[in-house]
Length: 492
Image 1 (spheres, rainbow, N blue to C red):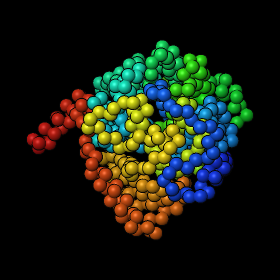
Image 2: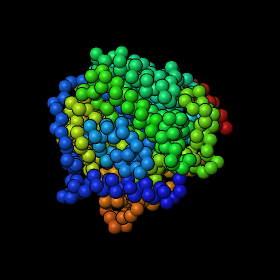
Image 3: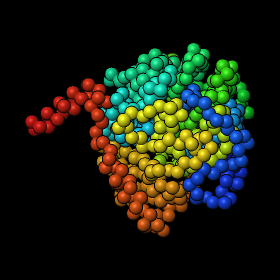
Image 4: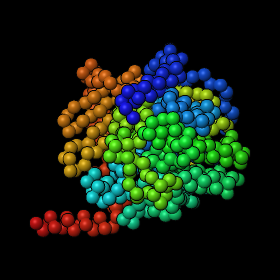
């Protein structure tokens, strides 16, 4: 995708955003109450214990949805969720990379608390970033909490919270059933995971269920179907592949929504659609082929690579691996006909991924374990059409690794203000992301007192984080190697 075309897509997405937000911002752009476009229908009083389906996409950009103004891609089923529910434009994830973002959603804790700082991979990589080898099974998490409230629980799709060195299977985290890829235990494919979810719904339709449906799209290898490629044959090669990938996800999400309709479960099912981080950066022609490691779980014969990653952040700065808004701000669509207003677009209420666990718990009537303290807060009242004042700042940590010899970058958001603290060179950046969503104007020199107070927040938060992972989240072989190395240094 050339630069001119990217700018066109960003401009069209921003135009769609402006149309949506014009009425919302007319009176007061900085109030903390929920501000939204006209709601077409008032939600009913919600019954107890809704079914919950959390659809977590992978590298899916804010601008990849037709409702958000993409000029080529059409997503009628994702648009249906938005049209029949509510959207929250100030939602952000807790890390711009897969594993830590998913760990945060699962636990309601910033990923630095569970020592998952980057994507989970090999032991040398984990050692470099002082990481755990997997998410600790002793952490409070979504399936455990939902199961305690009488829910049937399942995980279908991507795992990526540990899959080597004796990593636990998903069922050890509280799931009744799981079929995954990038994880241990029973396996599924990029396409079959949707059918796995439908089958689980059909078998458990008479009791409340919770499903983490963590889909592959739009991560590499791109795996478009022939039918979706045919639908977008008018586009150039790069955009055709990416559009077909998004189309495939949308079609299969439509199958899940139809199953809810057929089972008469739509009205009391809370469906959330979001993404683990922003879009992957487009590769060069040498990145056309991804590699053959996932061919066994693909539907097609060719693993398309990053050259075809032409996802859109709708003009937001950065993308995957960036702590600018393009890497963190992703779609957040919520549909629950029995409780969530229809047609609402909230442009100002600040929501983040660590809010999900406490929110789902409240919706399910679950009691959170004694001693557990989420980094987020329940925003159930906000989802239902009410208001929700942000009770605490939001934080991010981006680690460079021991090999780089650089202190982590920290970021904090409080209200409209977002501060970056670059510890390695003692510099800062300050943006008002309500006025400057693309983070183009650093106003740190204009607000020295704001910088001072927010920097103190970030550094104080950093002091609360563990230095090393817990032993039970580290493989036995790595622990033995670590002990051996310590003994060697002691003798020396």
